[in-house]
Amino acid sequence: MLRIHFTAADLARVHLAREPDPVWETLLSLHQLSGPRRGLPVFAHWRRTARAGLAAKGLAAPAGMLAVLAPASASYWPDFLTPGASADGLEAAVEELRATPRSRLRREVDRMAAVHRLPRWAHGLGSGERTVMEEVATAFRLVHRTIVAPDWAGTDRSTEADRALRTRTLRDRGVHGLLDSFRPLMTWRPPVLHVRYPEDRDLHLGGRGIRLIPSHFCWNTPIALADPTLPQVLAYPVAHPATWVPEATRERRAEALAALIGRTRARVLTCVGTAATTGEIARRLGISASSASEHVAALRAVDLADSRRDGTCVVHTLTPLGAALLSGDLPTRRPTAVPDTSSLRVVVRG
Image (tube, rainbow, N blue to C red; front, side, top):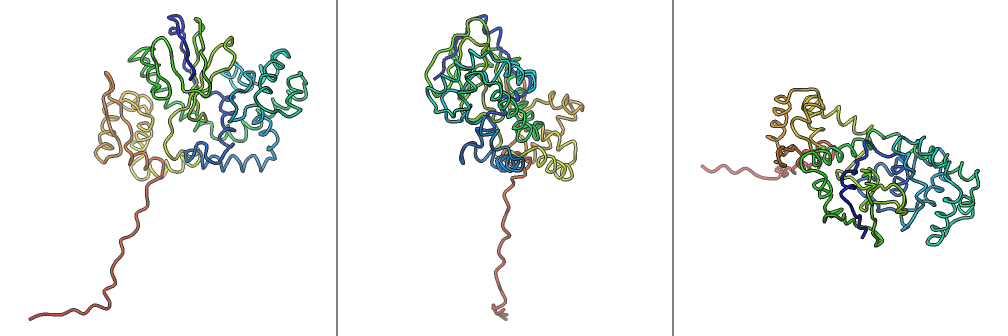
């Protein structure tokens, strides 16, 4: 269990990342490739595409390098791999990574070596060998470009759904409500946030606050930095539909859905997929609130959407049928067998 201790000053400095973090998503995407059952069935389609992309471009070695430094099964991996500059994009993060002081490289690589066997080149990284650091920087760029960037719109869509929910909760219930909204993943017992974690430790923020990073590829357990003296972040997994698919596939399905129920209503259904109020749907789509309400009512009438009150707002969400229609995962009904009557005799009684 990770226990994060907040002061009054920390509660005033809780920030929600405004977009997906490219470095965290790159490392955590590799975690999704590490085992046959991790993240199934959500990432099954993406996993096949990602592995094929890495193989086609001959990137097994760069991907393997990052996987060695940040393995999915490790209880620790170096904090220098997730620099704070990643909030400003991949290139800013890579430049900060390349500028990591040699003393810090040595300290964090040695700490990892104490719990995880490392190859010789990793020890060279800890010694400050520039060629190894340049290979790591290049690996970040290549892996991100190959398996994360192609569906960055989809990654942003899934994290945006979570951000919309958290932002609405913060607006309606304040920071205490925000921290309490993470159940059962995390439990808020003021002034401590209890986080399910592979190790038992306490983190005292001491007035520095914390940046919360919703992550598309994070799975089951949030991840914090190991060094308590660094500016603190917490990457946490967002909820996914049972059958998430890459954006290109989703776009084709969206076109078919628009042909079936109409373009505007299909767009409303998509908005409802991220849990939205009538006003939020209207603003996102540039339509009137009355029009948004009519479309939601029509979707609700055929059991594609549901509406529930959350504080002062009414939040619209998908029903299981609506989620299946949006994801293209509707079950196929087998045709009813027609009995063979060719051998039956018709008897006419007078």
